[in-house]
Length: 185
Image (tube, rainbow, N blue to C red; front, side, top):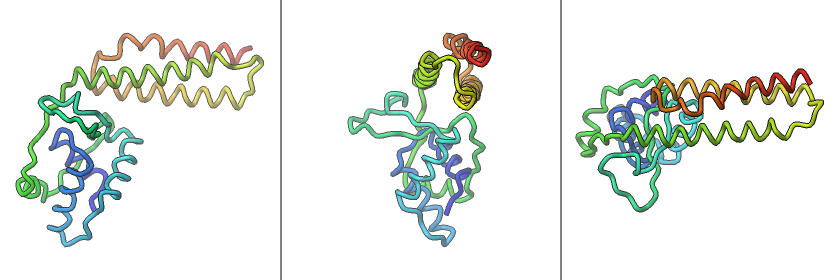
């Protein structure tokens, strides 16, 4: 079986890939190693785990230059927290499969992630607005944890696609002051 880091390396070399493309590539690599080949379900679970850790992210064909796809396929791309490893057998596997690197439109990728981040910030803002004063300390801690997760994701994405998130930066950081006000009330 390949590791999540090797999975990241496969996707880094491909630029963007569907679960099927990743699975075929991983299977070729494991055949070369005389390992048990992963199923598409195995690869999907690995991709989902990698996405939860921001090693990978998902996009659609709209963010990939020159790819038209009407079946709504989801593509995985390298995420901001990835530390890819490149399997030694990767080049041979890609030659055999005939896969070529897909180019990302990083402007469109940035727009997608700005929208996702804005939705998370709005959700947290709505939770803050719904707090009944005096708030339970456990609930305030939960809001603080959600805020820290949001800030961490903001910094990850801001490093990944610099300057794309400046218009929502102020909104995100203003949430901290609102949580502090709830703590003091």
